[in-house]
Image 1 (cartoon, rainbow, N blue to C red):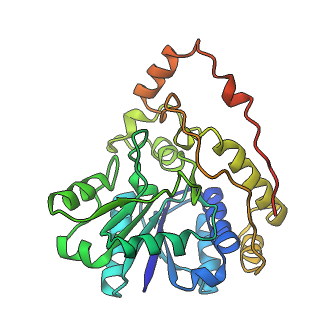
Image 2: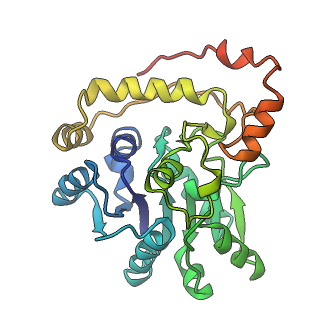
Length: 298
């Protein structure tokens, strides 16, 4: 089975470094052999291009360097064209503001995908509809439906609607709920805000670009633990140091809860969420500040 992991990047060099490190040192080189990694860069002006270049030169990834900002949806379409042309079986989207936390993500997700004969698989729950942070698509289905991603807002929402109209099989997989991934939830919004992209459907909702982790109370601690591990191996995020850390063969394992602790009061950084948080400002949220979770790393 051929899998194309596609990551769209725009000025998120630090987040991209975390993601690459997690793929190579937590998932591991052996499991990644069944996958090709494609990074589509939307004309970044930070250190992203240098990081992508060295990984491409060493044939660890494929890369597309756009001469201008193509935005998320059109950049995903570039990857999708490659997946169709080169006859990949699965097109796997991972956002650049994601960290992979469990080594079994590829095996477990693919086993679930195949056993249920799924056309689209992602994480969805009543607190968040952010399918796109980690989504798997069967290439033959998307080719048959002539599906594509749109620019603006949730780039996968229209595609999901099209799948439902044609009766395609859509299933949830607990990417976030069981910590296969940690979705920071700020990379895209921050880029939209920094560019002043008023044409983007989410532009008016970008009031707060701080990490929001889908309301998971454990996530800030887990993310901090991961970053401590990362900094021991990558004291300075330079392309060469990051590359050398990623090609090491020893794998890291984080001690994780069995399931995420979702607080529905912690909503995405949108005007609606801000209004609700303001109404609940007087309520006791000390459970979050007092949360203690083991920080042991192996």
